[in-house]
Image 1 (tube, rainbow, N blue to C red):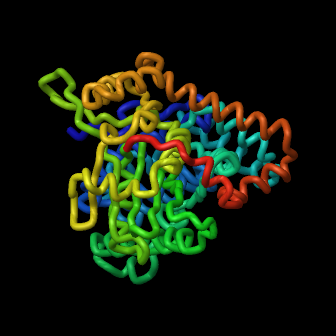
Image 2: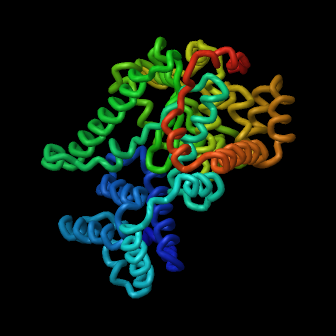
Image 3: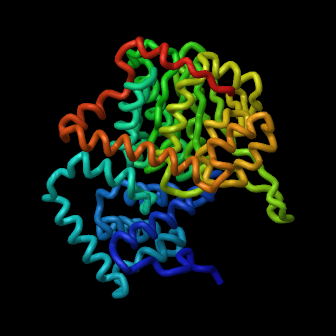
Length: 417
């Protein structure tokens, strides 16, 4: 007998907890099946519904209406188990209060007053309870702040309009199912990398290397771009599967010929099954923006020939794809790790860096480096919120690159890579 996909009933405490529970379930499903997505019927529609929840622009009633229509068109027996279970949920009396509350929330939001930037910033740096929260204002303000302190040229690119929010076109809809999915993914990549190419080509900083933080869903990944070398370094603290799209950049970009990505090392688990665990830095599902920002700030201070140095020690994964691990980077890059096991393994692989990494993590105290970074960001955000009007804050969010080359000399601190 087939086990139910939603083994535990979705939370009925409130519309928010219901949405969060559904988002978490779909996020986990997408992440665990990313490599086999082409073989899974309805996977594309799972991503569409996940995108609807992420964007938070449709009420639950509207989302479930889409699901019911999809199941009706496809036929109940042919629909994915996820949608079979969800298609009748909105008429289950157990969830009536949840749907009513959600409908009221959306009715009120139509006439809601624009939320002040200060309020958004304060929530984005203090409330990490909801994995699906977007933290664009936090990312942009921290980029602005750093650009005033060192030579830093950061950009935020929202991938969602080019990916999960991109509807299938008529040509794709007329194709066979699998063929249509492949064509749609190629169009997503083409549009996204055209946008990234635009950001690179329009950069007026005068710097050879720039940092782009890309938002995919609510997840943030760092791209360090070397224009002259025509290469991209991909840094994702969670080693999230959504970064895999960037591994294909040379196939679509007119400005990037080579990708190096940071791959989490396999760490001995001390068990028979599994014998190893993935040594990613980020272990929660909420803090990617903190990791991405800090990594972009640190990598901006690395030597100009960073990509050449990493390329000489990287493992070739494909014709134009290479990888390095966290163990090959400086202690500053791993100090925020949420796993003491990862830090311990780093020390074993880099005994000469033991003293430095232990100082940065207070003798490998759990979450010490991460919490220190978060508190630093909190102080900076609070300072701007206290000293700037809302209009002044919005103006700062528009300026995330160093305005002159005089700060180049401030970036003389060189880290080992």
